[in-house]
Length: 159
Image 1 (cartoon, rainbow, N blue to C red):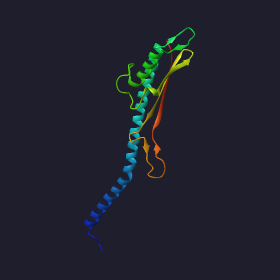
Image 2 (image 1 turned 90 degrees about the horizontal axis):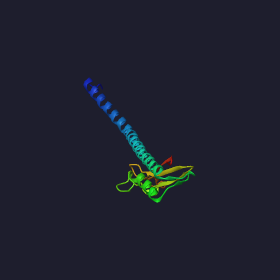
Image 3 (image 1 turned 90 degrees about the vertical axis):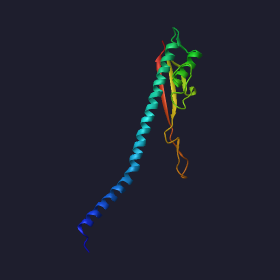
Image 4 (image 1 turned 180 degrees about the horizontal axis):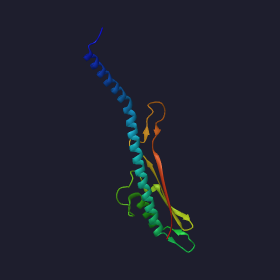
């Protein structure tokens, strides 16, 4: 039984549209995953850059205000210690305002004498992705932890 030529052309067009729909259904999850991963990496790099700049500013403040004797021993007084930690977390030495990064506290920042006239300021920050801190395995075990610890350390010579 022969089909008329206009029906064959119409059937061929419908079949082509169906193939395109199936290809789209196969490709869209991969494309969405790539877009989400790109956004997450960009967001993580932005937050790491913010942390590194804050630690650098804190180290500069501590190096400028720490007293250094002729023996090259650094003396970090409590006001400089707390001011440095506040500067890293909030962007000012008074510690007023919101944290530069969500969840960053003064307990995540350490300030100490690195020896030989140097000051070390370090901070660790737990990056939490947009999708949440854990990824469930849907009954196949414990959920996966998605948090990433971002460390930043700066050492400067005290003036």
